[in-house]
Amino acid sequence: AQSVTQLGSHVSVSEGALVLLRCNYSSSVPPYLFWYVQYPNQGLQLLLKYTSAATLVKGINGFEAEFKKSETSFHLTKPSAHMSDAAEYFCAVTISGYSTLTFGKGTMLLVSP
Amino acid sequence: GAGVSQSPSNKVTEKGKDVELRCDPISGHTALYWYRQSLGQGLEFLIYFQGNSAPDKSGLPSDRFSAERTGGSVSTLTIQRTQQEDSAVYLCASSLDTGVETQYFGPGTRLLVL
Image (cartoon, rainbow over all chains, first blue to last red; front, top):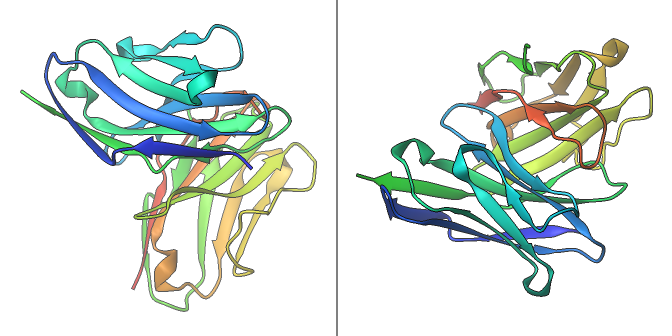
C-alpha cells in the first residue's frame, strides 16, 4: 500500500521568504504524486502533479516540486511567500491502475507580514 | 464551467438520525469519489464510482455508510443512525477517468452530529 508523510503540521514563514513544505512517500511501485491546496471553507485545488515525466514539476501560483526517487521525496517550494499563500497543503499519492488518492495529514502554512 | 457542487453545505443532526449528502459532479466526468476530512484523521477515502462498474466501497468505515450514483451523474452518500464520531467534512470529487487524472473537489458538506 502507498502512504505519504508530511513533516510539520504547521509551517510559519514571513512574507517574501522561501516556502518549503515536506512530503515523503512510500510505494513499492513508481508513484504518481500530487499537491493540493485547501483554503478555509473550500474544497481542495490541485497545485501540481508528478506523473513520471519531468522530475521538476511547476504548478500554479509559483509553486514547484521536485520528485527525488533516491530520497522518496516530493517537497513543495515557492521562492517568495505571499500572504495569499496561507492555507493548508496536502500531498497525495497513487499508483498506476489504482483509482483513489492517499493523502498526507496536511501542513498548515502561516504567512506573517 | 460549473465545478463540483455539494449540498447541503452544513448539516446539524441528532445522534441516531439518518442523513443524506448530495454531490453533483462536473458534467462528463465518469469517476466520482467521496472522502471524509476530520480532525486528527486527515483525508480518508470512502467510496469511488467509475462509469457503470461496481463501486469500490473499501473505504467505508461501517455498514451504516452507503452511497449510490444514479444515471452515472449525481451521487448521494447516506449515513444511517449517525454517531458523534461521524462529525466531519465530507468531500466529493470527480475526474474524467481514474488514476492520474486530476480530481476536482467540491466545497464539502460539514456534518455535525450532536
